[in-house]
Amino acid sequence: MERQMLRYTLEEMDRMGELLLCEREVNPEYELGAVLKYFRNKRPILFNRVKESQVRVAGGLYGDRETLYRLLHMNHENRLFKFMEAIANPKPYRVIANGPIKENIIRRNIDLPKIFPVPKFQEKDSSNFITAGILVVKDPETGKYFTSVRRFQVNGRNELSALIASPKLTNDFLELEAMKKPLDIAIILGYDAPFLMASQISSATYGVDKYEVDSALRGEPLELVPCESVDLLVPAYSEIVLEGRMIPDKRRLEGPFGELMGYYGAQAPHPVIEIDTVMYRNNPIFQAAFPCREEHISNGLIREVELYSYLRNQVDVLDVNVTEGGGYRFNAFASINKQRAGDGKSAIIAALGSNKDLKQAVIVDGDVDIFDLQDIEWAITTRAQASQDLVIIPGALGSSLEPSHDLKGVTDKVGIDATKPLGERGIKFERAIIPGFENIDINRYFPNIK
Image (cartoon, rainbow, N blue to C red; front, top):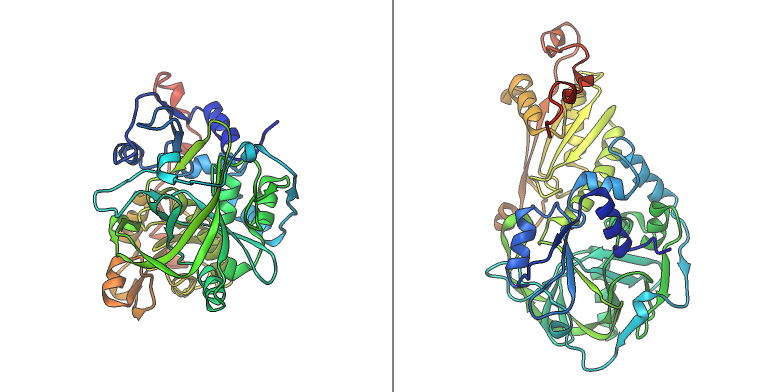
């Protein structure tokens, strides 16, 4: 029985009551993306009719936190430790001779815009973009497999431009380029939640084989098959695989593109990928994601693991939330069990130092729900004073993906200590409660309420 990659996931989502089927024909230019955006890319949708194409499109698959938990067979309480366990104890994958991905193989006359309905999402985007593709490369020294979600601008026929922001990937490519050698790559479409989550782990930080982390997360070996034209392994049950080479000394202008935080990223020269082989399943499903939504919650979940690890070296941390409103990278809330007067400030320092991207951090007590913005606002309003509890670090290193940093080259980082005082002074900050309120079953009073 097939249990890996997208088709099984769509069946699971259907059983969960989450999958929407769109039977109306949609235009891949703007219209398809507009439908995904309407649901904030949090509702999985299978588009069965796409204009001028026989290929179906699936999108909005992994944009909801609770859906991801269910697909990964974990919950909010244990998710940090499940991810830590997979990173610390990766498991072997399994190589098989053949798989459904090899049902169709194209080696000549490749014309990607004609084969697949690659969407154009936003008005000023420079071209159609593959936004859900996971790039696969192999470390030239260790042979370990590294994967990452990348955007790919379709230049025409078999040529793509790739934005490769990862330091490890960039360095590997530049070293090969200096020797006039191409970098073998594969692009995977039609994957599942463990494959996505493994791709978000930092290669530079952990140095682990992403396929082995995937196997640990899914609880069984990831099944892989050899590529046809490059020396790489790819998932046997994926929907579409593009095999090719990142070409040395060749650049194309890439962008503008509607990017993180809803702004257009700048146009710049980026490496070119030439696709030599296309493999796909019978009746393939093209995977799409509205820009900078779907993969960023998975990235945020891994950032929560890292933030939690940094904080627990300084304070008794209870939980962390790298927030949706901050693009799952720029803002974070953390709850702590405050034991010393300086714990709130120590937590701020640790949080803002955990990652250069993190721009704002709010630290609260354990009685505050860090996934409820109203509760966070309440804590800041009632437990913080700007003159005493605001920490500002001017002129720090930030992220070029954050527009105000990009204009100035540096970022001011801010922390708010919204914890209550210890001892007798803290008694005045105790919240009024209703005994047993958390156990109330409102359906007993209003049976038809939804």
